[in-house]
Length: 197
Image (cartoon, rainbow, N blue to C red):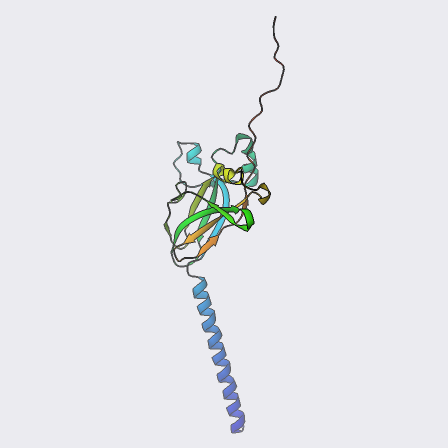
């Protein structure tokens, strides 16, 4: 083998090893950054059974399927709330500062609403450990009042979503849900009353 050919093979092997080292370092960096504190926010309807049945001793919500939510409509959705399920799927803890609920407003603006300190869910701010979750909650009646507000343009729809403010300054938008229509008050029974003379 000539010295020129041996030098070319060495140069190609060195370049390939350098490229492999760069790709490995970039992959390790991206994996490290992405696995830090990763927050996922899902929006669900649910109830606290302990609020409906005071004898129960549980602070965990029970989430409702679409069928169960519809089944409570004729009763006026008793105890139903809208939950932002905030999950830390990363490897580092993070602080959840606040959660505001949003809906469409005039001119593409978002109308935010919520309660200070999140009294129905986990007290905020809250330190969320890796693999843990917490809840930001708004009462369904409050969400209905906002989307049905007299001055709000009804053509904007009934969609709401949570936006979670994190301690690192970032925000996470939750999934969008449609707020059901408030059931009408039960009409008085119809029938003729007989009068006796």
